[in-house]
Each structure stands twice: as structure tokens, then as C-alpha cells.
Image (cartoon, rainbow, N blue to C red; front, side, top):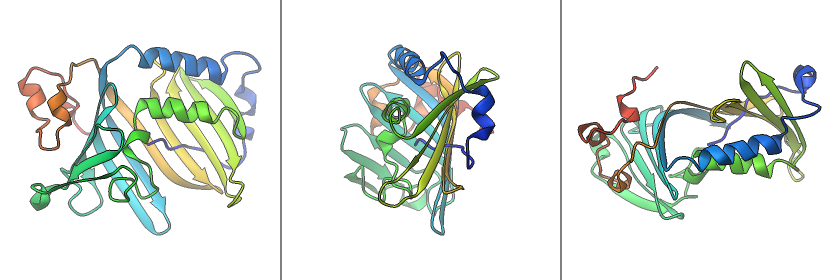
Length: 237
């Protein structure tokens, strides 16, 4: 779920924009190298977004295993029965999900673009992992104005563009570690109003996650019982 932090105008970046390296293409190359070095990862994902009068806010335990298996356990959400709900994505097309609480015994498999499986802004399961961040930055290389800033060991990769049909100005920044190339935050503003935010923390790599984790009724608490370090053991901050 790639979201981004931006304000109107780029004057605040002007003094730090690189005239030489690092360029976005160099950052992308290093992001790909890091991505190729692990087989699975876990992290804590916090996200919120708005659309009209609707608002969504979630804290998620996020699991990923190559080639592209994704599981999200919602620890806390602002919608009914979200706490304890689970979604898994394994076949490239569909998401199987179940609610928390008294509805935990019922599951359904839906297309990844179904509104019940996306954020309220339509972000899909396969737009929420690290590879999707790489692909989004890569796709933006020739889309509008892009700049890079380095501050306190963090890259800010920023761009601004205008939708040719709606004329909505979209401004975005992804913040990455300049050492690990992992994301810290991503935010989106539309015509000066922030509409999306995401932040990632507590990454765990190459824990040898079992394939069974990506079954809808598998209890992720079993990971610690198997001696596997798990994001569900990390306190929510």
C-alpha cells in the first residue's frame, strides 16, 4: 500500500536535490539487490486513508514469502469486525479473507480488486509489499517531476503529476533508508489534501516462514511455537 507525504510545491526540497548521484535509478538498482537477497519477510504495517467522508485506519502484521505469497493479520482497525481479521493472497488473482470476532468462522475468496479486499481507495493486496513499492517508483520515473533528497540517512523520493482526465494534482514522497533501502513511510496528497499514509517497521527477514502460514485458518501464533521469530511477538507501539 504505497502512500506518500507531500505538501504543495517543492521549494522545501530545492536545497537538497542532487545534481549528480544518487539518482532514482541508482536507488532502484539497490532496492532490487536487497529484494533479491531474501526469501521471506515480516513487518508491522500501519496505514490510513480517506475517500470522501470515509476513513480507514489499520495496524497490520504483514507476512511475505516468495514468489509472492502475502498474508495480513489486522491487529486493530476502525471498521466492524476488523480486529483479528485475516487475508491471504497466493495465486496472483484472488484474496481469501475472514473477519474477526464472532465472524471468524466464515471465509470468502474474492477477486483482488473486489472492494471487500482492497482499501477504500482501491489499493490491492499485491500493491502492499516491497516489490510493489519498487515497481511504483520505477513507473514514476517518467511521470511528472521527480526529485531525491538525502537527510539523516533517509532518502526522500518525491514526485508530482497531474491526472490528464481529472486534472487532480498528486504529490508523493517515499522515505527509504539510505543503508538498507527499506521504506519508512509513504504518503499521498491530492490537491494539497493528504489522503493516504503508510509506515513500515520491525522487519524480520528469512525466518523460513512455512507455506501453511498462507492458509486462511492457520494461526500465526504457531510460528513462535515452532521456534520461528514472528512479527506477532513484537509489541504494538
